[in-house]
Length: 234
Image 1 (cartoon, rainbow, N blue to C red):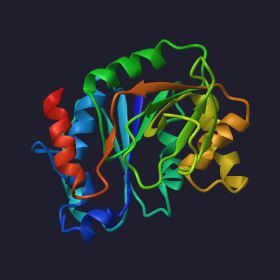
Image 2 (cartoon, rainbow, N blue to C red; image 1 turned 60 degrees about the horizontal axis):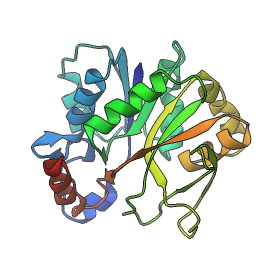
Image 3 (tube, one colour; image 1 turned 90 degrees about the vertical axis):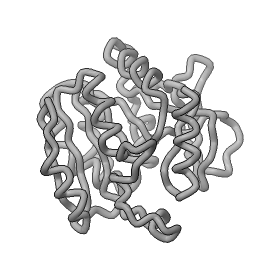
């Protein structure tokens, strides 16, 4: 499976709270976020990895260029307005194949659950996308996921929605049917990943959820010790 990593954000909230390390290199239990994800991808049969960073990330660029991985690593250096546009920049590296996994750089999760998640999608023939979700809500603006009784996704709602216990975990497994809709979504005015997910539902694609026990995004300085405590308990 191909893996794609969005690491083009500024990490402004971390910087404002005194974290001077670029977000992709923030260590969790001594391991930079990038390295942790690369290791997990490789352990889950990665055939290639593509990553996008912004143009100001000189330190991250140098770090990536000296890495030696057992699979091809494609690096895009481009500043984009949001993660959805970053996804669009990664698109050419995901077209030659079938299924792929896309994630942002900052989610912390159980590696065992991720392995089961990837295996589920690799063997699934009943959905176009398998979206990681969690009932652990620790986000200022969570994206709630509406489902039916089979955990098929029927729609999405913003932070004030109370009809679902699941929120989006920022980890997305998709196939080529979903990828082909990306330029059409941009043309229609979609500008964020949460909007693209709703666009997939509205277009008639089959999306299912895969619940994780906990996914912690490293958005604030306080999230670092939270993540480390979580990983130590696994």
